[in-house]
Image 1 (cartoon, one colour):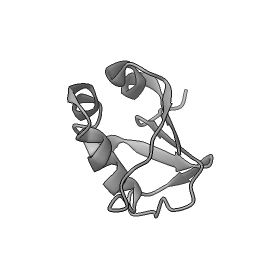
Image 2 (image 1 turned 60 degrees about the vertical axis):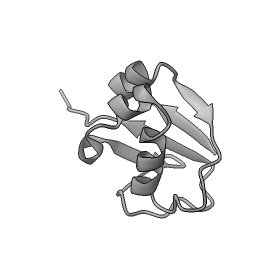
Image 3 (image 1 turned 120 degrees about the vertical axis):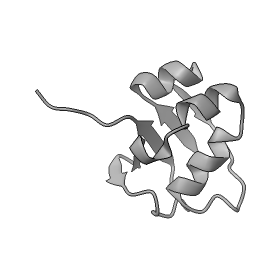
Image 4 (image 1 turned 45 degrees about the horizontal axis):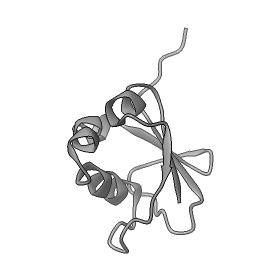
Length: 83
């Protein structure tokens, strides 16, 4: 699946996107975040506060408990504010 990173999540990881094959145990967005955080120091830093990270699956905003099976694209970004 394609994973996109935005704003300070991208800055901390050091890349805007990548293709990953998460393990079968990563069934939800929260599971995927935990797995990504285990991939190295930069990922751990980006996802150190998973409760503030927002996600979208195939361009639709989702909650952490949302299943990721069949997703083609998952995007992670910090909370946004309007102006």
